[in-house]
Image 1 (tube, rainbow, N blue to C red):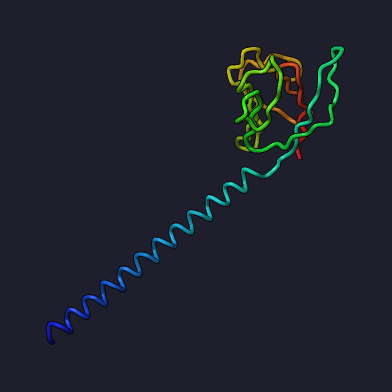
Image 2 (image 1 turned 135 degrees about the vertical axis):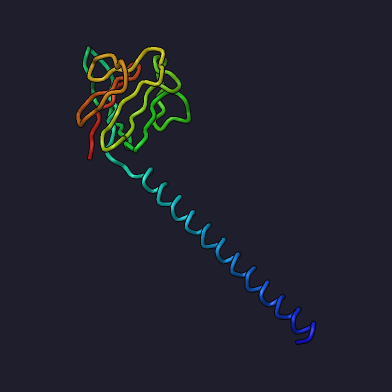
Length: 146
């Protein structure tokens, strides 16, 4: 076998190996993209809603505003929250509602004025259910789970 034929065969083998490596890289990237897209879809899924309530005469009244409840829903004055409320008694990052192991949890995020659950001050993470009322500042939210 001549040197030219040997070099041609080596070039052909290296080209096929390079093409295989690029194909494998493309397949791995495509699977990673599909996994990330599925994860985003799960986080966008609406599991219920929060109905905004205003506090007047020692009672909560529905305002007609509703917000979707996601696996992680944050409430506060900060623009990065899922639900942004304009209430001077609310902190920037006031509270969050999180789905963990099939249970919904309400957590205060070290807010200045605290978070209420059904009128009681929240002392630590607590499980919430359908119909519970979460108080943030002077605003309340009724939880409706679907």
